[in-house]
Length: 524
Ligand code: NGO
Image (tube, rainbow, N blue to C red):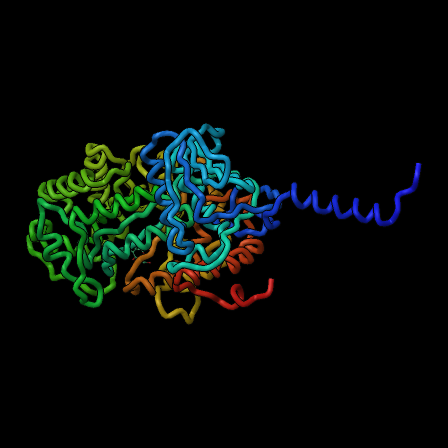
């Protein structure tokens, strides 16, 4: 046979090159493993190509679930400002050939629970599958983080919206991942609370605990006791004008949170931390005299009169009205730092309040001191400072929420030069906030006893959203990862690199975060 001439070989070579580039993918090569996802997922597999989101991409929701359709619209709204795309959301069982994001409920293994999801990005489509709409919602937060960072911009950006292809399997290690906001010491209005809820949802948190009452202010309308807000809500620390939520406003917060799969847990702190109520109704005081409103920042000086029957009528009305407007399972009754209530008065008081909460169809949560009372096994003890209280709670077969003050209190200063915040539990640097494992925190308390973790922001020194953001970010991102990602997948050296990269998104979102040079200016 005749040998191939050079020109023949050249033509053959060119044909092969053209053929492979025609038949092969035109999508830019990308690596899903390069993307930063916070909290870190259970597994990420990359397949080396990309999907391009464009103005013709459609969102398809499988089946007729109203909740899922709502979540589809949430995704469309999330994508709209930065891209300018008005993506159509349709409910269907028939998908087109390509260029769509598909959201579907389909059964995944039991380890995925309500919040787990499977996110798959192919060259032609993206799909999020989960056992429930909640899982789809969490998956959307991941999708958001693997879109270009400019997706967080509030104004339209000119760029191509490429997503690396591959598959992400994910589910949380704890079912309760919360934040607490103290709106009693300084009041935060409905708009602020919604903004905070939006920020929490991005990191897959699922609880916002609102500390609604304290010595300095009563912030929730109780129709049968109107002076609580009229008088008790009229000021705050420093003597500002305070404020309160009407029940309608509170319901609006609850709905906004529900749409983001966040449960609102309201707290009425008692029998201590009650000066605002005591100042509003003289009959709640043992001497029948109402004290002055209080605008300082001391704790532990007030108490309801635990001997008076009228106190329990009051508590009954408050809990009933609150239970009626709270769809979540839990009511928080405080119970902390009742320094002027005798233990022999404190215990029966908590016992009776527990009965009232249960009679209203809710479960009770209280700060760790409540472990002294006869708590039921479905009552939850929120650890903040006394290990022995948390241990006592577990001995009584209660579950615990972990809010160790020296790790999770967002009101603690980062270091000695932080202007805002308190320091009674020590300074909490970003590393210290991240570097601990819930199941190794308290001797005798293991993973099965722990419902989850919660990060409280007490607001003695925090007066507005700019200050709030500085104390919360970035520490809460670390807490979100502790709650979601199993301890064996977490590592500070790996996390700090991811956090630094992720900070571009915080900048675009306009979040006023604390940025120490050791992390944010370091070369990793
Ligand atoms: C304590 C106290 C709060 C303070 C907070 C300040 C608890 C559970 N009770 O935590 O009233 O605001 O510290 O860090």
